[in-house]
Length: 368
Image (cartoon, rainbow, N blue to C red; front, side, top):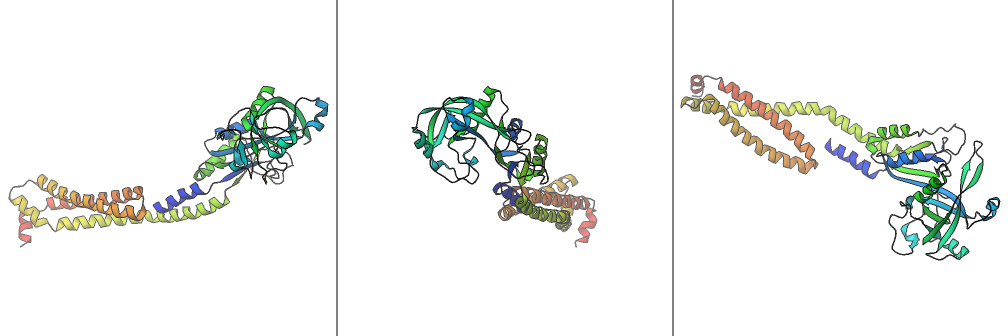
């Protein structure tokens, strides 16, 4: 049973349960509108591990009239909080201005990474400070897409990106900016902030039910394929089928072993009781001789009990060592050792009590 429980813990450690926010009918995973309060609650949840977010913007270089936005918004901006937010992107694709920025994406630094092709197109150089006129997109109640100016941001080019193929981006990003840097732009503008996509992992897959209850309290719903098409990120897809299938098999094994545990415990108690009783019962003459030379009944009881306790201690050490080598579980050693100790001690005390009630004369003559 200890082995099965250990396997269950190892299963939870190596089989991460992947979760993704989608729209209600589950048809889109990016280009969503995920409310900021949901973002905050996911980030602060102890049930969530490696929460990953993106936010998409459009930008042009420098200032331009609002009515000319279609002509100037040629740069695709993505804000990310982890490098894993974009498939295909890895550390070896990034060339930093100086030392590699390990916490760049999780910070709110006023810096960016620019693709090599964009650097060539705009004749930018590493270390330049460029002026990005940021625009954000939103959907109205009829799911029509609109754009609004966000901020004219001076930002330093801290690194460049080699070309890579991404399976999650419909339009490749020209510029990457830390997720929190863009959130601060919305805060300064006092505009409602929405993340574009979100995925994460369950922190403890053994607490799946508790996790799902918390996600429900956050406001995330189960996918409903018949729901109307929209861009609101309010549904959570939990890909736990593989973990649940393997976990259920181990749980069935644990339940089966646990159903035999009472019978095994009773058997151990009986064996310990009978063994100690028979061992003590064969020493009635020795007990009678000690009583005949004047040793008190209490002293005899303590001497015999101390002797048996020493035997039990030796047995515990040897048996515990063998059990640990077989099962590699200190819990198993403690449980089995405790059952053996209690059962053997009860049998020993009962046998000593019965022997103490035996007549010394009868015991001496019955042994002749």
